[in-house]
Amino acid sequence: MSESAWEKLRGLAKPSLAELFAGDPARLDTLATRFELGEDEAATTIRFDWSKTHLDAGHLAAFEELAEAMDFAGRRKALFGGEIVNPTEGRAAEHTAQRGVGKDESVALAAENHHRMAAIVEAIHRGAMGEVKHLIHIGIGGSALGPALAVDALARDGAMVDVHVVSNIDGCAMEEAFKGCDPATTMLAVASKTFTTIETMTNAESAIEWLRENGVEDPYGRVVALTASPEKAMEWGVDETRILPFSESVGGRYSLWSSIGFPVAMALGWPDFAEFLAGAAAMDEHFRDTDGSANLPLRAAFADQYYTRLRGCQTRAVFAYDERLALLPDYLQQLEMESNGKSVKADGSPVDGPTAPITWGGVGTDAQHAVFQLLHQGTNLVPVDFIASIAPGHDLSLDHHRILLSNCFAQGAALMAGKDSEDPARAYPGDRPSATILLDEVSPATFGALIAFHEHRTFANAVLMGINPFDQFGVELGKEIAKQIEKGGTKFDPSTEALLELAGIS
Ligand SMILES: O=P(O)(O)OC[C@H]1O[C@H](O)[C@H](O)[C@@H](O)[C@@H]1O
Image (cartoon, rainbow, N blue to C red; front, side, top):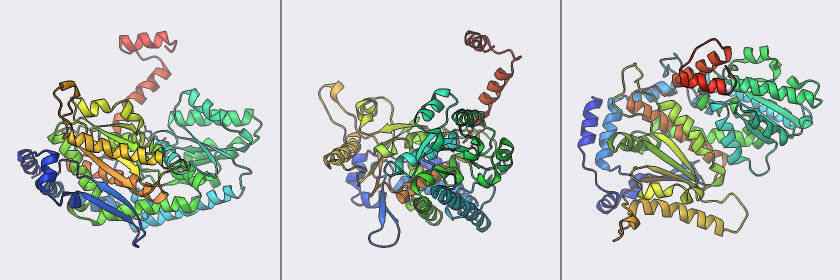
């Protein structure tokens, strides 16, 4: 049945963006939607403008058929119902329950964990662990990218503690954090869902050592553990009272909402963290309750599928025209590529076409002066997302923000319009797609909704392709081989052997 929807999709005409706008005066109304965070007139909004993509009424209808053929409504119900949606690991994926939307028992458990987390955050703010000026958050992958992004996005001004996120096993990363912290007023957050990840545990040991060497008598007493494996954190030496657990059914790259968000709550204070959760919950409800292409994450997934499967695009780019969201492309890389970079469907059979494109991007306007040449004139068609905020994040002259936003909107217009020239080197083909997400402001609530939008977009893409977005076995083999190298005694290929010898490891 999905094959016939794809056949229909492949058979549809592909008008240019200019033709699409000329042929449909209501295009903007259909494809640029105001998402409201709250009920009243003054509610904060996010505009999701997908009008500069090649979606038209025919494609939307055919993609809706595909969604039906792939049982999108059933898969979505299973997600929110806390059913097993990750069959290879036999798990549910209950990140939405962290925001209060999901199966009753899971929502209640998440609320209980949050209650405890809030109490601990507030107690530390009040001095329960002595003076805390610095927080070194140690984690990697899903236990680091979200906290780093959220702290950078929301806590640039007036952070209640100075947060350093350290992920890399390269000691240079940890040393950099030590340089910025006074050991006497530093606490550690060790963040690991499994509490076994080699990078995190090695970094945590080094941080404990650093505290000890610098006169902190009980360094383990300066640690808060954020984990779904509390018994492992206890074995490692963290007192039960300072372990903030979360449920096994929250995936690593979906865990920012759980206790993994501890440094965000420490930097912002609990009320703002609660707003962040509420913003995400508003997007959850929209995603859960809206049918068809009015559903914003689903609509975005339709466009994603259009470009990957019907136009052969191998990458998609995200440019944040906001310095505060500079880490968003890194975060989305894990979310999208670790979730949907698969070659088999949920039932183990081979996929029917390309899966996740490579997500890449950067920050505007910097990227304009570095990589936009390829977007405008290169041979790759790259769908682009622009993300910006109407309110600036600084107190400098408004010229800065006017120029920033003018550039952002100019790039979308230029990609679409193109420009003729007698000189081929100076011609722009145009008809290049982009979507624009325009926030009223970067606030905890809009930021929460923005991240939840991307989580659901990723899920919707997975459903349309029939794959399981919640496992990540592809990261295991390299880890296993690294362990074998550490252990010694295994013979590898000649190239690897030579590298090991040169580095003095074998
Ligand atoms: O939180 P942890 O258990 O330490 O895992 C950290 C990360 O490592 C793994 O390799 C996975 O690929 C990631 O999805 C995960 O977020």
